[in-house]
Image 1 (cartoon, rainbow, N blue to C red):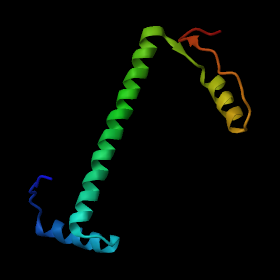
Image 2 (cartoon, one colour; image 1 turned 60 degrees about the horizontal axis):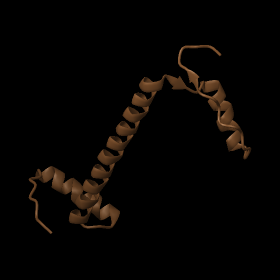
Image 3 (cartoon, rainbow, N blue to C red; image 1 turned 45 degrees about the vertical axis):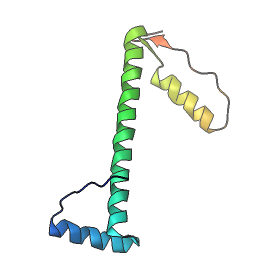
Image 4 (cartoon, rainbow, N blue to C red; image 1 turned 90 degrees about the horizontal axis):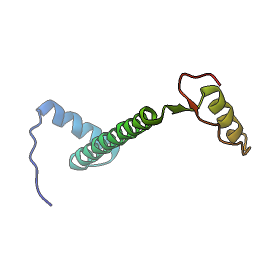
Length: 96
């Protein structure tokens, strides 16, 4: 395992030490945990944005959507344990 050096202000070191003690861990363990949480957050955000971009590209390519009223009814029925038919897609901007 490699070593990385970071410079922290004395104030931040003291805050980390207090937070680590309250958490029942060492300052080193607290910092590692914080870094891991931040990396996980960044990866989840990247995945979320990637999924949004894929969905947008799909919409742009075919213009198909499911009306919110239809989807809300579908989801409500699923939440009640029913097995409703998936709502049909419609071309965006056209009333059917």
